[in-house]
Length: 165
Ligand SMILES: [Fe+2]
Ligand SMILES: [Fe+2]
Image 1: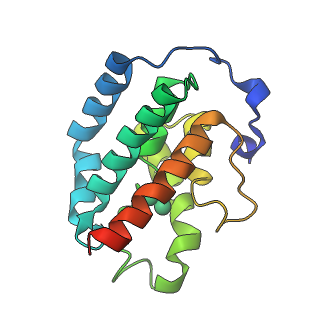
Image 2: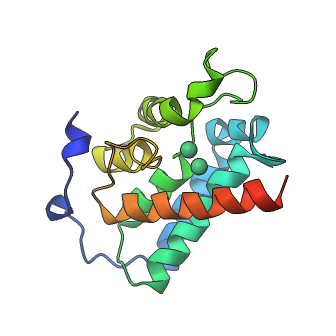
């Protein structure tokens, strides 16, 4: 698929500053969307909903970007982060009957939903598709936004799993 071939060289907006207003505006719009709100119905880790989890990953991704001066594209970073687990089911009791495979299949489900409901472009799709690396071993992040979200997701997931049961 084309979005797998994205490289840093194709980063058309490299050097674009990520300012607070841009990321906040994009995130607030997504948080208010009824399809994103649907993620409140599903548990992610412990007592944390998928909605809360994705919001945390999005906010941490923005903090990492600002702190390390990575100059990620605001749209790609925030949309990719907020929709990275937009698979829309409760993986504890219904992941298409394949509970054991949730870790391997949900990134692709989220990517398809992001395309279907939000017309996600290739760069946003790449962030979502690669966020489970290294579990999905061949889906190596190839953009700065995909790396930021992949690392932010690991940190938030471990915290939620260990501290918020
Ligand atoms: Fe995930
Ligand atoms: Fe996640």
